[in-house]
Length: 25
Image (cartoon, rainbow, N blue to C red; front, side, top):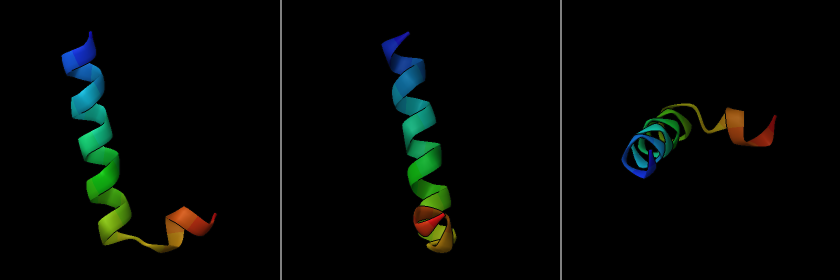
């Protein structure tokens, strides 16, 4: 489970890097 959780966090981190505006939402 932890491995999957880390993978999800990496995806979210990548998305925030592509769309900085999401962090403000």
